[in-house]
Length: 340
Image (tube, rainbow, N blue to C red; front, side, top):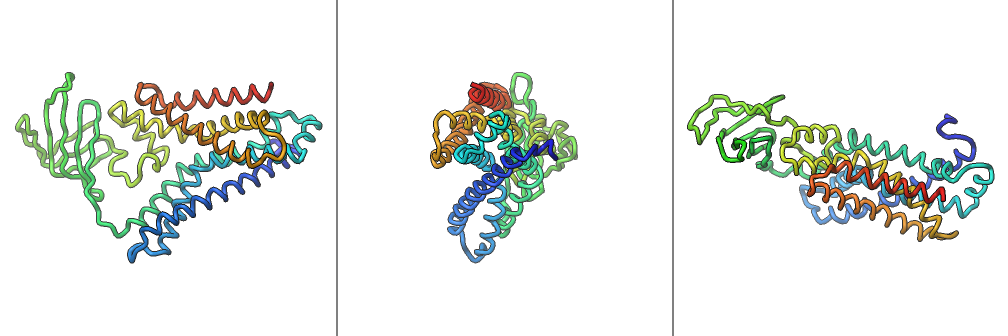
């Protein structure tokens, strides 16, 4: 355990960081809970009681906590560094031979643990919370027919879903010149492991009937999902990514996948830069300023990643690279400032 927590000074820094992380997370979680409550009270009705509203916002807020934890991490790291600096513990640790980087690492340890936990939550916990919340709020609503489009290689598919039943499907086959070659339609279809089965199909161009027609390249994930791409588990998003057809759509899904996967690394990078800048800009007893600075740094960097992600999607650049490269630059810049 000493390898992880270190000596007495390391453990003290770890506990202080953990305590402030819990405090900041509780404040932001409570604020998010309150805002969701105010929003949901507008939908209060006989079919959506106050108790159900409380259950709904509890599940939603728990799910959202994993999304806002990187913001909490940045703010809490800057506040922890400020408190330790103001109280003299940081100077005492340096006198005892602890380097600045070692002290920052001790502050980061609980944050890294919780950021890894959020990554696991995106896979195992938050999708289930989203489904529970959806079942509470929309349980009495009538099922609606969902109509959608997708493309896979040279096939455009238009289809509908009612609950789990596929219907009214049309497959538009294009040749290499992107000209319409065939239109296969059916009133019902089934999604199998590696293909789609169209029942009683008809080709309206070739004028041919099929008792059973198979679309061999039809995807078997991402169809009729209860959750959107942002709410789905990372493993499911990856499977959808491997089966997505149009390049632009693939880039959008890729951005959501890499943004979640690299979230811990991006958060640690902006924390290092934020602490380095706070040393330059803030003197003692400036914790309110540090709080605002941390929030601005977290929101600003997240906005930059979104802008770069959109640029990558438009210009056919890897969204993963558009997220990883700025994080590496920010982290490297922060380390250089700390060593200066």
